[in-house]
Amino acid sequence: MMEQLFHYLKILRRFWVLVLALPLLVGIISLGAGLTKPQRYRSQARVLLSQAPYQQEQVLPFPDINLLNSWQGSEFILDDVPSVVRSRALAEDVSAWLASTSRTDDPIDPALIQASLDGEKFHRTVTLTSIASNPDLSIAFLEGAIAALQSRGLAYWGRSSEPGGGLSVAVLDPPTPAQPLNSARSLVLNVGARSGLALAAAVGLAFLLHSLDDTLRDPSQVEAWVGLQVVGMIPEE
View 1 (cartoon, rainbow, N blue to C red):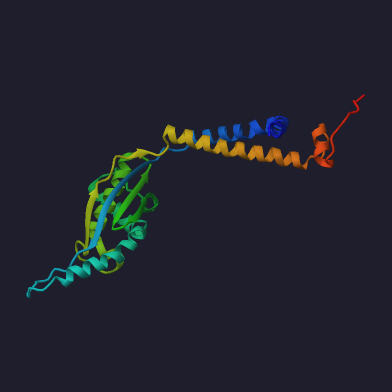
View 2 (cartoon, rainbow, N blue to C red; view 1 turned 90 degrees about the vertical axis):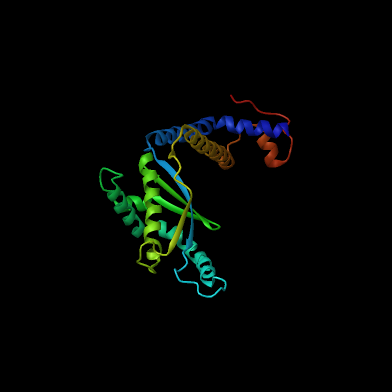
């Protein structure tokens, strides 16, 4: 066991330049890319969406079937919410909301808003995520998305043009304070992970080069090739 370990260490020592240079190079490149990458900020909010029941007068004392239907219809709505959040239509409404509320000094391109917003459904709640170039803008995008869903509602599904849109949007968790994505901890983890993978690749490449090299370097190679013990060596002149 120890003999094999020493054999492997000899191989790595022979290719020490490769084993050290590759992870060092990858680490330097990853560190430089991480330091020059523009800072981005992420904020999240959690909402509960359901189809609002139709406003109608309950004449007879029977169970409210309309309410039951609204809950059943909510299941189909929730499946589509992530796509709606990432849509151009909602991004344009958010851009208009930002302009009307003077949240930004300059108009925001809907394409930028569309690329910043995302939604993820978990059971019957939807987590909205916004990533932007500054923390205030990240929070403003989320507030605009919630306002657009509350005002337009089922209009995004092509089913309503009335105020409120037949969609009930309850804010469970308001937008969180925006957090930087490129923190020092994430940079260290990223550089460390990439350097570790580069080290593993360098070690594998060193063993590959050794296996392709048929140069006779020590007696152990002869013993491994022919299966006989070496009893003597002829010194070089």
